[in-house]
Length: 398
Image 1 (cartoon, helix red, strand yellow):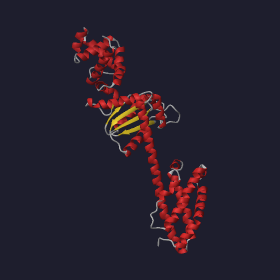
Image 2 (image 1 turned 120 degrees about the horizontal axis):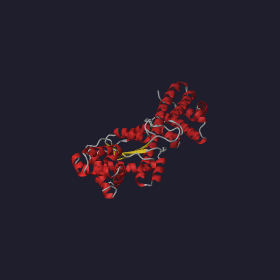
Image 3 (image 1 turned 180 degrees about the vertical axis):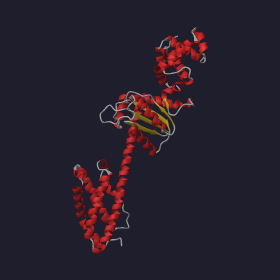
Image 4 (image 1 turned 45 degrees about the horizontal axis):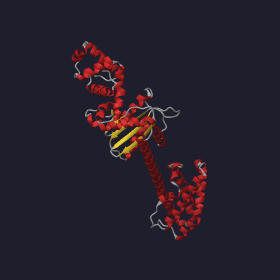
């Protein structure tokens, strides 16, 4: 028998307020954290308990009607899930059930004691599942809102002033003041993959933003903290810029698709410059079929120049052209002549009226100080493009 008699139901109906009061008394006596809640939060919890008991009695009276335990939590605002955890809520549910399980059998005829216990346990199980569902929806909503804030912050880096971009990032939860690096990748992520990426970023470094945009993903990573108590980077022995760049390469390497890592910048306010470089690199990436994956945006400067990226001209000048020019005319002229003559030491020596060993020495010095090797095809292309840009801007020696 799984139904109560009319007298049993009537008795429960008449004493349901007492069941609620006794349940709340035990909750207050059992949980210290409950007693420390603001009055409005405790009032909302009392409303949930009251509606739960009322719905239980309604369900017992009309078993043919489908119960909807999720509705129990409708009387409390969604913000309550941010004050009371799921574990605490389940504890409240268990406590109320214990009280009802103890007192309800005393209110019904003796031959219905077992029946009412079964009904209480069945309804309580459904309430527990409903609580988990409510919290899952709240977490999903918070995640969706957080993702939206992160995307707005990324948009600000591309279109707003540095100060506005930094403010937007702060709204999205950015707290660090260390170096920043960006990643632009061509890949599609579903909700689960996006959540996993965010988790990976949070585990790897101190601050992160993730923006999923159709078939592409943008990631912003922050370097080691400058404030006490924040979590340090795992690569602590390295300098902050190298450490965050290494983290970015690891994160980008886990993405399923082509990924470009932008240059490291001083802070979140300058992240737009790094992000624009990464996005420009991603657009120019098809021009270098043999490019590694992931690849730095600076390594794609020749392709970016050919693709019309205006930022690339300034970057190749700062990264390659200006350091080469600072070494002096002999070194700059040697590199330009060597590249123009197809990489021939002898032809370069004859043209410059120097010994081949002098050419070799000068090229070696350029590799040491500028960081690019003219005898390497890829490095040679970078140097050649830097020389051309320098000539067009009037920054190279004739």
